[in-house]
Amino acid sequence: MPSYRLLGLQVNAITEPELYEIMAETVEADQRCVIAHHNLHSVYLYHHDAKMRTFYERADYVYMDGVPLVYLGKLFGHPLRLEHRSTCWDYVYDLMSQAARRGWRVFWLGSEPGVAELGAKILRNKVPDLQIATAHGYFSMDTEENQEVLEAINAFQPNILVVGMGMPRQEYWILDNMENAHANVLISVGACIDYVIGALPTPPRWMGPLLFQAGIRLLSDFRQVWRRYLLEPWFVLGLALREWVRRSGPRG
Image 1 (cartoon, rainbow, N blue to C red):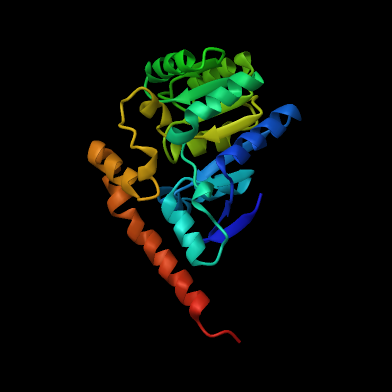
Image 2 (image 1 turned 45 degrees about the horizontal axis):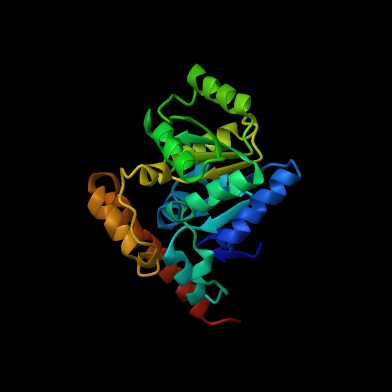
């Protein structure tokens, strides 16, 4: 997949269909890959958290989960399109349909107790042949509880391990456990299952290119995400301005 340097990090130009094909090739070859994503929040974390940088260095593919990154990439001359932006609440049902059609087993790790189970029930109702198991994300990652989670995952033998515990916890967990979690594909998805059960409102898909989705999330979950949407973008803007100055400066 094409890879581009943007704001000091690497991103891949991956469309949703290409994302499924990456998974298919990995499963069919019985190999393993880690699929991550970048948005403005992760850009901020990447530049402030050494463990997050290590995670992204270990990831095999990093797609863009944010329209601003696509626009910034285009601004700096990269051949990006809005199709290169994906977000889990857009592709979750298509991904589950792909899993059912191809016979993939899916394990969903994350959210509060009961939430992932309810989400799995909703997904099974929409995709009847889906093979899915779950575990909540409220456990201590450095105790026996984590080992119990790994045992549950490995007993199910998933092809796709979906980790939705929010940044940076989900990335920490994948980095620390990727060698012991026996799955072909490990992918981080944030609060996706909360959208599936309706705990968070899902904006219409057309709002994504207009940047309205962030506003809806801010209004619906202000106390949780205000810093992410009101403060962190200024840091990213500073990175973009420095990059613009560097590219526009004299070359000798």
